[in-house]
Length: 121
Image (cartoon, rainbow, N blue to C red; front, side, top):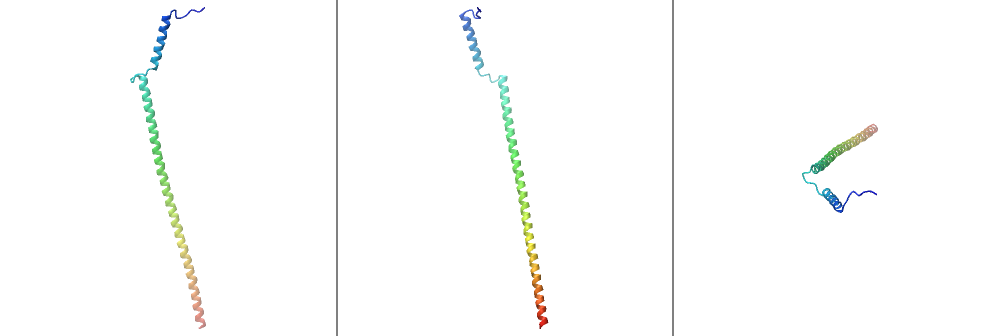
């Protein structure tokens, strides 16, 4: 038969009490100046600072993207306006050319008519 480690009741009570104390010590909050607490606090602050830096970087990138898009929109608008002006100028030039041709035909017809009336008279 195996021999018991605890010979008497008082030794078992003492061992149980020590176990309870050890559990209570583990469950207690560590002191604020404990190196582990300070280290965890520093790590959390570093994480928060990194998160804030990433957020600010994202905001700056978003502002830069918006500025680039606005510049591209302005450039596109300027190109479209220039294209519209060029098309309008071409239309005006085309109309002027057509009018000049029409006026030339009219003048030639008038000249022919005047020449034919002067011959017959």
